[in-house]
Amino acid sequence: MTAPGATGLPDDSGSPEAPHTSGAHVCVVGHGAAGRLHLRLLGNLGFALSVVDPSAVAPPPGVPAFDRIHAAVRHRAVDIWSVCSPTATHVDTVAAILETDPKARLLVEKPLCRTWEIPRITALLASHPEARLVTMDQYRHTTSMALLRSMLRELAPQHPLRAVRVGFGKDRRDDIAAGRFVDRDHGVFGYEWLHMLALLREALPQESFDAYLAASPEPDHLRVASDPELVSAAAHEVAEAGGVAVELYSTVVGPAARGQVPMPGWFDLPVTADESRQRYVEVDAGLIRFGLTLDPVTLPQGTRLPRNTHWLTATGPDLRREWFVHDSPLDTALRWSIAALLSPSGPPALDLRGVSRIGLLAEAARSSRTPSVPSRLPADTPSIRL
Image 1: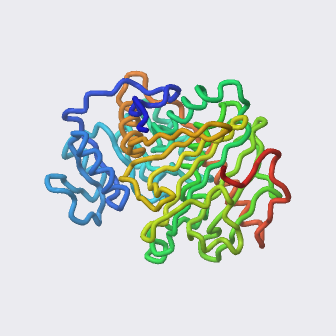
Image 2 (image 1 turned 90 degrees about the horizontal axis):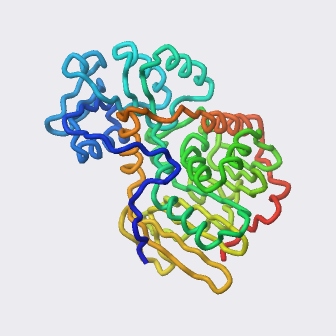
């Protein structure tokens, strides 16, 4: 069953009216994997494009490339800057852009900065009050989560929310060996954890999410697979957030982390031989369990669904319903971010609590010489799937 109307943005995302993009110029800073993806999506949206990267290789035809930010501005005024350089350079890149363009509209890939850089980025933006900045937070705006919330209200309106579980897995060892996607600052928490927090935010009541972020990670409820090069390669956190049980699990070495951090039963999803990515959200409300498998989706019989297709199920006593949703989370988030940057009201206030959280988790991983095993799971947190 395909969800009707599964193309709108979440109602509570503060989505501004879509702007007219014809003729607007976006300069992409960084021509790595993220930069090339942004160029393709932005080109599909009809923007004029340019690239800043001293080592840019074969930008798209008709897209001028520059080695310095000020050279791009001399070529043509920039309406939006898309910062896709490595995380360690984000703050310096934002500073350089603001020096050249004090009223810049900036779209920055996640994470915006490292934990200890929060004071500097905050000061930079405070000293440029006419600038605007949005962090790319693609899973905050995915339409499949909007559908999950809608079905939660329809199918379990009187049931208390009992548990939320979010898991992201991928085998990044080949990429890491080649020097791509290496985060030695945050370890496993620097890869998918911010995406997981975005999904957790959309599943929890606001007060519960605020309670989760306000509490420090509990060592007894955090298990981490240590790694001599990457700080950590997998992690499993259990917590309680405003009366709701929370579980978060991620691995960047695929199932190889099982020896130190066993994969929770609820995350043991079917995969294909050539695909290691797994992205899953599970929500329990009363006796009803909602399961959202995000792209890539492999059905239990082994069928691989088309790209950007997500699978939502609801199961309970005498209940079994499912929906298939087609949506590109990155494309949806990109549209939302640009609309926010160009709208008269501007984007929402910058929220860096997620960056602070992954910093605390990374520090907990560093301070633990051996993986710590959760002494207990919060009440009503089964680790099996219906």
